[in-house]
Amino acid sequence: MTTPLMQAVQAAALWSGLLILLMLVLSGIVVSGRRKHMVSFGDGGNPDLAAATRAFGNCAEYAAPGMIAMLLLAAVGAPAWMVHAVGATLLVGRVVHALGLLFQTGPSLGRVIGMLLTWVALLTAAVGLIAFAVV
Image (cartoon, rainbow, N blue to C red; front, top):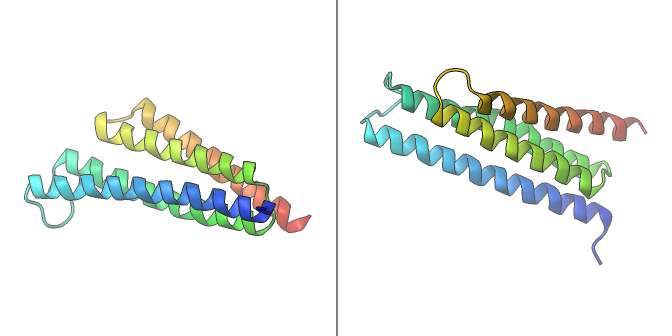
């Protein structure tokens, strides 16, 4: 029988694994772009490569604290459904944001929606962590 704690830890593991896979895909896009444009470091002034680099970097910058927060939520006794909600929202937000960066130039609806979903996920995690820590 799986305990509620184990279910929450498994939820954190699921969404963390999916976020790591997303980062690997985005990293692959950067490497592919660098090889295509013969750039060994940075973006070489190429706008497509700059967008790919930022899509990866932005994902890493927000996914890392999200993954830590999901594990901490599980550790402090948050229910698995809450960890799943944070993880799913964060993953969708990061995918939509990356697509907005990779396939649109300038401000894009994908970037806006992606950031809003990311902020909702992180805010939910933050409030949950604080609530479970003081109760």
